[in-house]
Image (tube, rainbow, N blue to C red):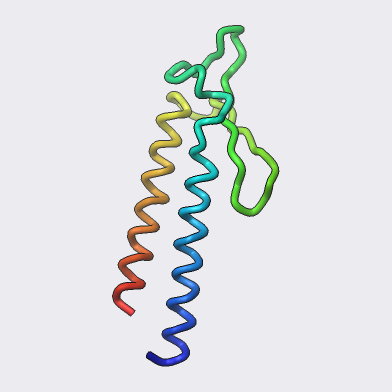
Length: 97
């Protein structure tokens, strides 16, 4: 294994770890939307929000459901599937080094 391959392998491993950590931080069940699962509007008529902390910041970000035509939990499942697909692609690339 040469130095270039080693560096590429290390960067792929770091990217995989960052994506896995991101999934853990985004999909904590402690979000404002969890009590309204499947209902895009809260009991008092306000649009429910989904909060998450991105890996690059400790600040909590909120997504408003008005931008998504279906409940935010379903949108987040799609997002999670896309991130997991990227992790699988990177793991396959790492194996092929």
